[in-house]
Length: 284
Image (cartoon, rainbow, N blue to C red):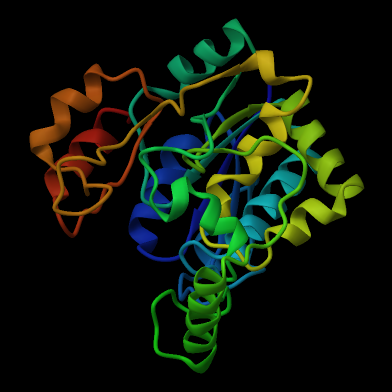
């Protein structure tokens, strides 16, 4: 069974190289590097099953994040992967490679996706619908002072004032974490849907954080919905702070190991090198 690890990355080459070194013996690796990244692609030149693309400038919450993810799914599908796991360049595995593979192989048709139907009570911006129905700039950094950001901010103000909303498609919308684990059937359906229903991707163009909506909405409205388990298989702390999600530290180590996740995020060796070293050493 060929399992692809799909990684979106933009910084911290040492972490990325260590992550790839842990995973490459048992997985096919597909990396999308932010077009603005200064990471040297040569660090992966000697790796036979590590594939790197650098197609989009990916700002947080932008439409380009969807495009980068979609490119990774397409690339891994072209390499005939049987299972697809999307992670970030700041993740680290919790389990050993063979433990992850064994769990997937027990039921390879199950996809693990965090989801809830919109509106979500725990999401601001009208439970997530304002992400889709208001117009957002997806060219530069969110909340910057560029002309486009100012223009879109003013336009959203007018939309709210006049109760104007973009028309949604006739589907139930779902949202959750964008880090997913998908069966081959799910990825095949996803790619086929995007190719045939071009209006769906177009509707995400001027959105905010629709990378947390598009996969869930397509798959939960599909015939494969019964094969989706509501679980991202990630250990993520959204409650403790001081960052959201929290950059994990040694104080979180026991909770990480006790979770049922495949990966922990976020890890930053510049914040806590001890937990980075401990998690990477345990996989060597």
